[in-house]
Length: 523
Image (tube, rainbow, N blue to C red):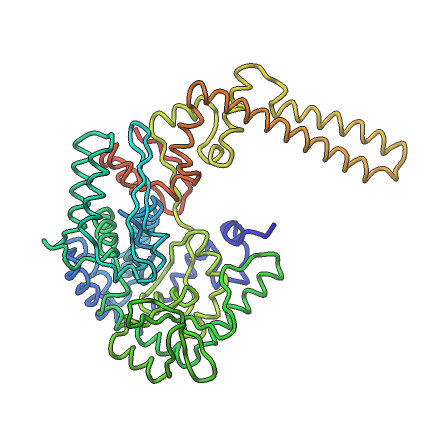
């Protein structure tokens, strides 16, 4: 099994692949990037928020701080998921706001920024979301988003609004909470009084803004013309030697592979780290053959691509191996709040940053939150288990708890420990009689113990399934903690908790310490 890059980084390892270790905040704070035009950046963001219909007092206050010559940014981001996407999309933004609040000072303001991945064109990853109501009905909402187009170019449709509102009509939750979420959705669709020009990414951005702007977070859409213009120099620099970054990524991939890791980024021969948005709206990877660039549909010279950048820089966009660099060339980034996949990407990007004269920022492992509603918290208490244990193996957790209640000692961990201890004694005696049998004796003990452990697990899971047929406990746990077989925060929409419990979950979220792994009971 491959080693886990994110887990080892979180544990303080892999310093050879990152510019800063996971606890390198003080080192990160040492540089202020005085050359960056923060006033121009703040003005571009002001233009974007004015066009988005979200230029409120919270945004203005944050932009004033961003324009300060010593300002820094805590940045995070996510794909523009349906109705704010999975809960961790909100958790990441909250973490950025919490960390910025902790580090902010009058002399060196720190601002939280949420990078909306509007350039992404993978419709399947952003088109659906899940919400669980009080009757434990899991509602699945899916919009038929056009594939191949950047989601920032996909117009929001009125029938999607109707779908969302129909879900709320069928959702079992207090009417006053449903009304509040309905208002959030309608504001996101019709900010500024008109929904005609809203994109799929705009609706996501407005929802994130509505939830987290009061905490100081500013959303940013890289497709907006004012912001795309500021990113053009980085993309032009990439065009000067467009395979250099790919070579650095492949070098890092080889080093990771040699140490037993599975690299997340690979760049085949000729592949650049640039996409172009072509005349049909499709976003396609650029490849380089000699001096000529090409996609699946046409060829380009470097001069033609530079002309695209000059005419409309939003039509040339970075691939995953360049996107963080473009982001951190635009922003005075102090730390980048990231999930496990982004940490794995980051392990291959240190030298790509150096190609652009930048230092890779600190990667801050994001806040992780599992929400425990009252009925689930009570059930976990009775089982003596955590949500994480249930998510890892719900049948075994329930089965072992039931075995304890029923006195089924054969399935307990203590029984396995006793068997292992007895086997050790027997095998030690055998090895003492004939030292050549030491290895065989140890292997036998391990095989027997493992086999008994598997049998115990099978018995516990069978007991859990029997109990579920009677009481539905296992089904309930899975519905809340493993909806659709996926850990809660990666599947369940955060609006689920606002629909059922009002603003309390948002208040609890924004009272946390940044960077933790939390299981939060909702009162």
